[in-house]
Length: 245
Image (cartoon, rainbow, N blue to C red; front, top):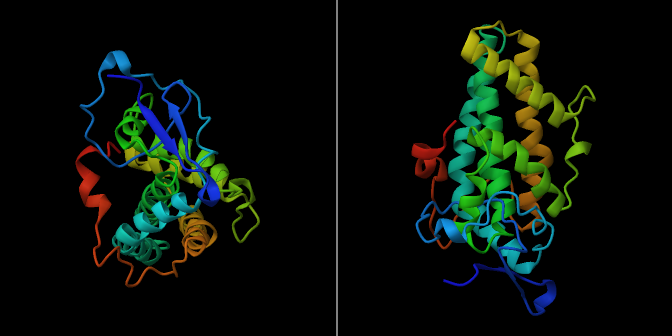
């Protein structure tokens, strides 16, 4: 079997570039059929993130639109439900609230941001899955590590996102995830203001990232009626058995 080839479409209908896995790092895909690649051909996780900034084109946008159209409504229903639960328990049970809000944020990052953004750049899904399954203890760690690179590829400035109090959204979210983890694993206390901050972070991801991304590919928010050729899909159900988080 020869080198694995990854096709990166050129913008404006120009001839596409063809790269081997020695040239290209592909950070994500949702195809979990992994048996096509022998270990001897596997390039490993350290080939570098050089391709993530290359593939933005009309074809890339079409792939993002297709992913969101097919999956967005089902994911949003879960995110919206988690945010409702977080809001209703914020003052009475802040620990439950932060768990629900961070769940909403993590679902948003994985299924409404990272997967659609990188699906526009990934053209060899099996190799991509092999790459992202290396070197991370849980999948949410991987998601947070890859999102900044995906944002740069789509000209989204993650550092510019802010909360209503002016604090940096991404830094605040990472801190609140640690607070959630300490409650889940060690039953450490959670304050109502921390729960409120986690809700603001999840809502900020939707307002400042998901909505503009959907708009950039011609989709209106919220995703009522989103379909791809009349079909919808729930990727959370499809991946629950190997999400690892």
